[in-house]
Image 1 (cartoon, rainbow, N blue to C red):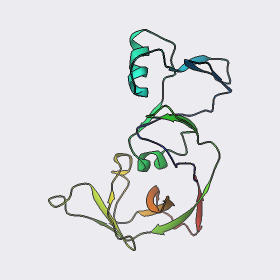
Image 2 (cartoon, helix red, strand yellow; image 1 turned 90 degrees about the horizontal axis):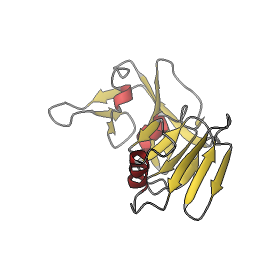
Image 3 (cartoon, rainbow, N blue to C red; image 1 turned 180 degrees about the vertical axis):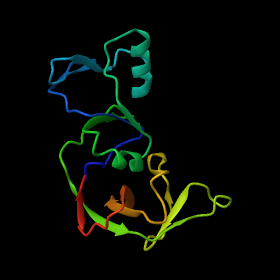
Length: 174
């Protein structure tokens, strides 16, 4: 089981791991390293989804945790792994992503944008049978000279970085 297994998107992330997490029958409270206290979840609200409860806590001006990042899919989360250390998925499940895990890495420089009139925003990489959606964060950095580094997560390749230098390592720590 990998560190991304079981995440139900969207995923809400922050850049630091909480110091302590306190569970009661109806609430989850966290304390950050600088002694800031936040409500992570409050099950006394009738909403069934985690995002529904977060929005309800906002209306009541609760001191709830404000997430810095929202990822709608695994590709976005992988691109932000150098920033996101901890978070909660759409079901309210907590994920500590601070511990690095090794993944198989592939580097390619043969890029081909698929024609915009056929399928906009897709990129074909040499040696991979399926096209990649070009993440918004990478739209400007992908050119015909770019070198794309891929990580194999749960039997699928994901872009984890775009660079201008060839990478020879066979694994990457995410």
